[in-house]
Image: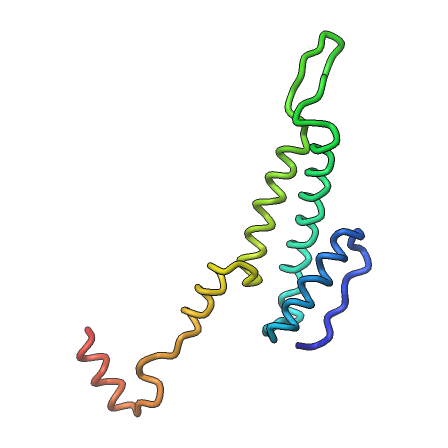
Length: 130
């Protein structure tokens, strides 16, 4: 894997997650290129957003008062965090960071039964399997 540098514009939490994921990809010798950078950026940005929302909810609770009469409503961090978590899962699948996505990738990378066949053998295989 070519040296991939972390974007300077990411916040601290995103940078920590970036480094963690890059290390995992390097250890697993994953084919990660410049084409994958935006997917990784999307994942780490949403990871940071989700984590921050969870911290706010933990500190302030699930609801907040919105007027002097004591009316409460759900904190906006709940829906922001939920959306960030959905985005994280999508990017994780794109990057092969879940067991299921790795299994799908490996299945799609499986070799064809006609690998090594000459043209006549491939034609015969196609006729027999139609």
